[in-house]
Length: 125
Image 1: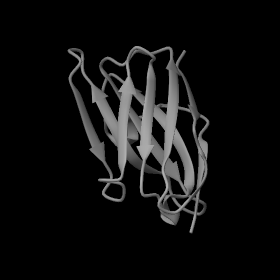
Image 2: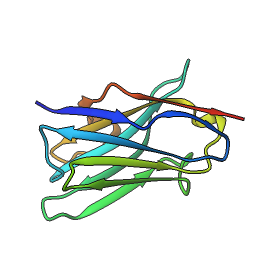
Image 3: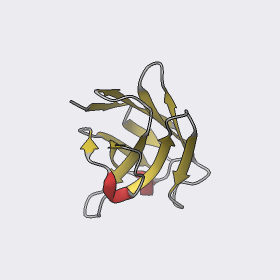
């Protein structure tokens, strides 16, 4: 049974940084696509960043244009933990952030079938 537990959210001033963590169980970071999504009040959920890990440990990353250059997705395979380092935060980054997994490595945003409960990020200007 896949379980994803996010942590690290909070309140921060514009220009600040936060690092989100997602502790994963019931899966390994092999042939899997892990991602971060966010949903702001009144808006649709959007994919923020994703990382693909193949069977041979190859990894590839993708970022939404809105966060490119500011956010970094990474993972610690030994700890089975996914991270999202968020820098230069602005008020448009305020949202509930969710960790998600797509087993089998399909990285289409619609393919993510396992979700965490979310962690709130609030940026004040």
